[in-house]
Image 1 (cartoon, helix red, strand yellow):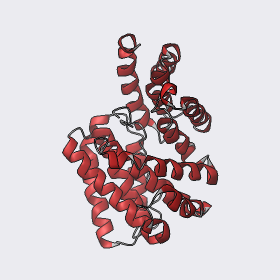
Image 2: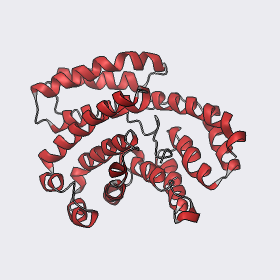
Image 3: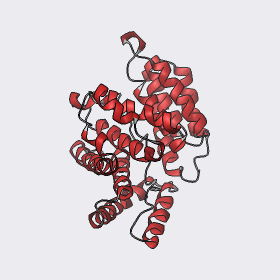
Image 4: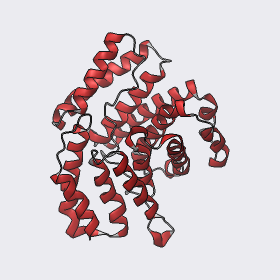
Length: 284
C-alpha cells in the first residue's frame, strides 16, 4: 500500500490559527507572527532547521496548560506537518506521528468525549457519534482526522492501521457536510487521495477522487499548488492518464509560488512536481 502516502502533500504546516487561547495576547501574537513567517518562507532548509525549536516551544506551552484544546491541536498539526515534510527516518517518523496523534486525541477527548470513547469501535458503531459533530466543532474533527491520516501515512506496514481508513473517510465526509469550504476545501484534498488508491479493475472508484481534486482546485482558487501535485500523483497515475499528469505538473512548475500563507507549501509542491515530471516517461 505504498501509494497511501501524503508525502509533504497535505501540509498545514504551522497554520496555527487555532492558537487563539494561548496564555497571553503577547504569546498569541508571537505564535501567529511565527506561523505566518514560516508559511511564507521559500527556503525549505531554513524551516527544516528552525521547526524543531518551535516543536519544543509548543510542548512547553502544552505542559503549562494541558487542557487547552487549541494548543493541543496546534501541537498536533505542527508535529504531523514537520514529520511529513522533513523526517525520512522510519523509526523517528513513527515516534513523531504518535505524538501528533496523541495531542489530537487528547483534544478530541476534552471536547468530544463520546466520539473519543468510541474511536476503536466499528464504523457502524462510531458513525452516529461522527454525525452528531456540529459546525462549531468542525476544527476539532478535521484536526483529529488530519493527524490520524498522517499517522496512517507512516504506518502503512500495519494492516490494523489501514483497516481504519473507512472511519477516517467518514470523518472527512462529515467535515464536508458541515462546510466543504473549510481549510480551502482541505477535506476534498484528503478524500481525493483516499479515493485514488484502488484501480477500477479491483472495484475502486477513482472518478470520485477526480471529482474531489477538481473541487479542491476550485475552493483553493488554484493558489494551493499541492492540489495539482496530488491530483497528478494519485489519480492520473492510477488511471494511467499521462497527458493530464504532465499538464497538471507543468502548470505547477510555471506558476508563481509566492502566495501569502502558501509559499512554503507551494515550494514543496514545485519540488515534488519536478521529480514526478522527470519520472513521467518511465512510469507511463
